[in-house]
Length: 406
Ligand SMILES: [Zn+2]
Image (tube, rainbow, N blue to C red):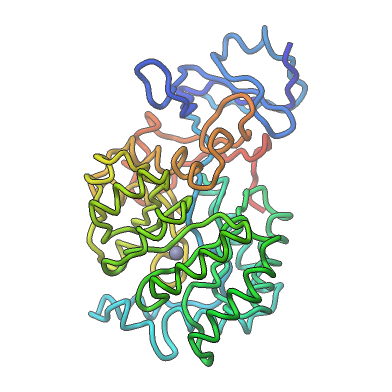
């Protein structure tokens, strides 16, 4: 007998996301799963559970609802203070996003608000965001710093992420994004030097990834190569914001340095897409940010042809995507870009997990994976993006425990 301390039973369809003969989603009808100490230990047909599993703990009756792995969000900026709702309105009146990145507006404005916020207030804001992620079915996020842009505030942002991890069942994978933009009141060269000589070594123990925005108004290709190259030498894994607003070298740099992910990619060329696929990098696409900035669609067909895995992320941030909802991002990817519902589901689970180095553990359900799953009021797992803008998540389970909003 297999010992378990938690089980989900009677899933109408249980999508394991482990491909089986003829079914890329690995669906089990009337499925069940059992977990022990936060990991899946058994998965199969509900009728076989009692004979194979010795369950001492809670059972959650899905009562025919669909069950899928907890969603994985591979690009979020959850540590910030302040609002930029007025800039959203200005863009609807014709202002360009790039033109807002100057003076006291844009990212710099969020940096000032984040520097001024006391740690408890910043943590409360981040915790509210964590609750919205969980309510919308996300159980793992990649979480960037990058609204401090000086040693003390970047350190404060990492403290927030550490305290947040202790207070929420949401899994948080920290990324150092000191190379978000050049902050005000410091010279470019001096800031790049501070990043490479002080901040990158200081935060190595606290971050899994280092990220950089390689594009105007942020960093040039040569600055990006220097920063990410130094990060790689120090042992960080790499991500990059690239080709979001204009064509550029960012995707090549990601491929050259073996980045885990290259993000946005609206303006990636076919040759860059091939290079990323060859390098084993994952494309992390951000439909909600694309939607509010009215950007062009990324080269989805070229990515498909090249076999480049496409993850879908919320890009939660105060400037272009103030949303924790991956199902909403999946709807946009389908309706605005022509991705299939299946591609969007793979993008918010397996491919996102791969971009975080969590393949086999998150974004899928199999013995040994995290016992993270969600119950959904949908006909089939592929119907999630059909429900545009409404939350069909009934329950969120993280680490073998049913999450309840606090
Ligand atoms: Zn971003």
